[in-house]
Image (cartoon, rainbow, N blue to C red; front, side):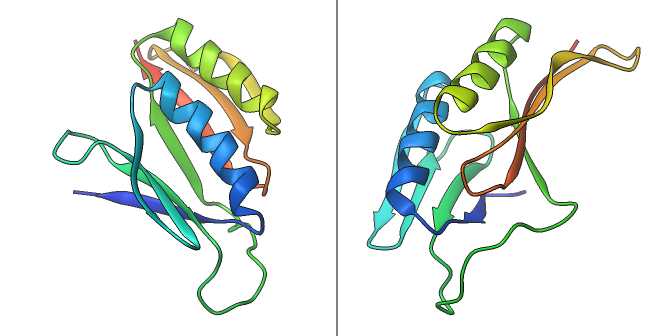
Length: 124
């Protein structure tokens, strides 16, 4: 249903370094790139992609309160790696990896360098 999700950035080169590292761990790469926009994902494969862009209206990018993008991992070890990669590439912690509730949901929460909230998760 969802093809890709876009987050705003005020520094596309910095966002590119962050999302290139996340995408590499997820086994994908850039699928589209323009002067002020980069999208990561694998066309024709299941799952949504993610894009980073400078806002079209020219105003500074800002974070949406209550908005979060979640990356589906293959296992808990990949959740841990994605969380570590995010922090190593300028991200910040929003909740370390671990189980959430008792339904087998395992997730790590982080923000990208622009403050967009993300997580990596796996359903147990």
